[in-house]
Image (cartoon, rainbow, N blue to C red; front, side, top):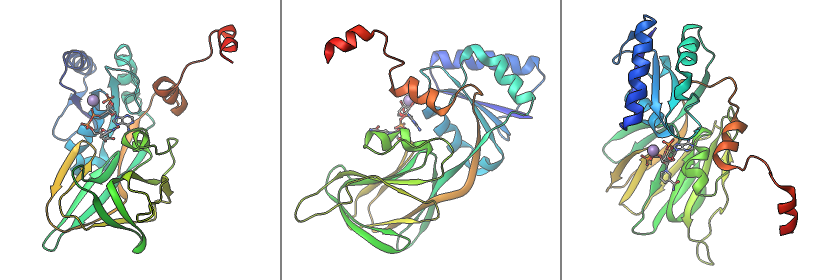
Length: 272
Ligand code: NAP
Ligand code: MN
């Protein structure tokens, strides 16, 4: 086993990473930042995004396991007090869950470029109305006018997608979710005006008319100033994420977005 540690740059995360390094050394586990088959990421959900993009070329062979230094997130399951448990899980060949990345091909008149994402791939223009045709498997579904369009994976459903009013999707379901960003909707312009959840066999293609747009993929961006099309699908490229045995999707949902339970029934009755 060769382990890399990927750390968010804040003081607490760096301190925890030092602790993990010492534990790895005392367990005679090799640290290898160049060619790891395990990456321990220390920070938050955004830290996994960055770690994945760093190791994208060898992503299929890597298991990721997260130690959180902030609040409970969707990707980092372990607390700093559970470092021994993290090491034990690695030593005992922990079960992990395989996730597919989102993949896109951006084609201009002169070039083709591939990008990958964990959460979502989106096109945006915050300055002028973005105008684009939307195709699903080369079938023209809609002409879109608005700020942009977001294509999210199951993992990304709780990220930007959720802020846009998209649906949260349970861990394990393989889907693509198309959501509009500030669509124009009136007698002249029609939009789907609803999150659209698709079978991952489909390819979603945008062909923007307005030239200047931003393509966002996780925390990364590309500024486009020529005509292009972007085709987006669920990739065959995968990565493995080790989850805490006692941390179900509903535990994470509950601690991130919901109230634990109604503590005082009398008080609730008084409101109604
Ligand atoms: P970032 O700081 O890395 O992430 C922004 C916030 O989103 C952080 O609080 C992060 O959690 C959280 N997050 C990331 N992935 C998540 C997921 N799958 N489920 C729930 N929360 C998640 O910011 P960034 O550098 O711009 O990174 C880009 C990501 O931010 C994108 O993938 C996009 O989903 C999200 N984003 C959100 C909005 C919005 O909601 N309006 C707008 C643009 C981008 P941690 O604090 O634990 O790292
Ligand atoms: Mn962050």
